[in-house]
Amino acid sequence: MSIPKPPFHVMLMTQEVEPGHWLLGDANSGTIADIELRRTNVGPRYRITMAGEVMGWTTSLKSACEGAWARHDRMRASVYDGAPNRPLPRPSAVL
Image (cartoon, rainbow, N blue to C red):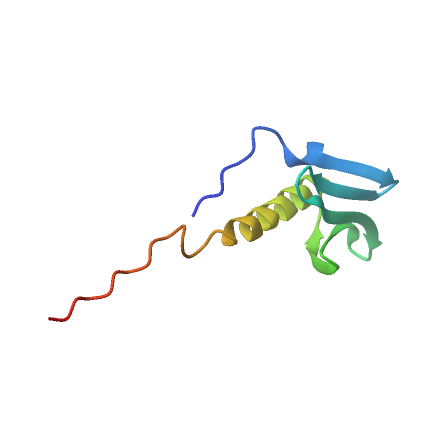
């Protein structure tokens, strides 16, 4: 299943609340992800947290926003799986 891309870049939906700390938000859902710039032994990395759980680490803010948005989109799409959105198989008629 291919997820349609929004007509804008999701990085435009971030708000920097303090230096090195961004909140990715949605008008309907509120805050989707918490993105923090951290210094590590291998260089600067962006930590992505969603619903209090660390989703992963990336090397750029752009990829952090795209990954968080893709996961949010998958979670939102899974709500509509199953009936009544997908018809159930008809029972076989036994005569």
